[in-house]
Length: 176
Length: 176
Image (cartoon, rainbow over all chains, first blue to last red; front, side, top):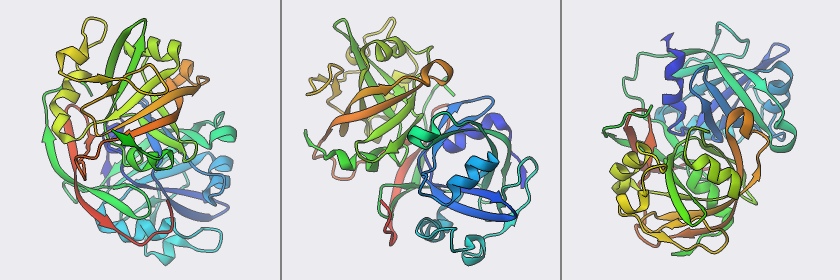
């Protein structure tokens, strides 16, 4: 995996793909599926996301204040759905779904080797956790695989229905 | 436009489309382009979004605590970009871009007649505005046009590049 400049992180999350979120706590890693996230600032890249207090990852995220956001392309869609339909409380999801945990540089949460992009993140604000389960993250290191050249991401419409990226259009715009 | 059940609002925003956000203040309406938003809860539908304090809409949103999130399909892509590249401070954007403001039911901000869905929203939390420009909204009334049947939304990758919805896939999932 190659470095991805932090200033380009928003280009991957702003389109709203389904992502995976990994955590590590007491030597045990976990991965969950997440669709409720948004960019908050370009640089440093700030990201808000909702991790429900009903999710097994919630306690690890709150305690360690670290995670990785891994972005899968459509080839992983089946596994992404299955990851979202079981719990780390009784499942080693990396093993069960054949995902490769890889060591990052800044956080202990694992990268997902099969994902085309991985964002190492630290939790920088927890003031909205109690009321809304909203965590504010800062991406502190980002990785991008060379292949595929133009990964197609998936966008969840509820109950396992997804729109896959189709045509790419370019319109004149001065706005990032 | 028909009623859209509030419980279905997340299905439209969770996929991460570029949206329009309208406001009205002192008899003057405005519309801006927005990509930084996420769902926070299903019911009542809570939505977080970032409206920069550099945007002309910021003051109206903060003062009136009302807005409409209108979702355009790809046929409006050129106008969506142009709306994002000018300011309501010196432009009547509804007039300039041939958009039809329509009266909603719960808020004074106008619906956008050309958009396939419109969500009337109230600001319910401003505690993250000063630090992050994050507003928490509640959708209080939602509208959906019958046509098109399956609108294709657009997802911004930066500087006027968009992924348009392509193939729709359905995978077995018990999760909303």
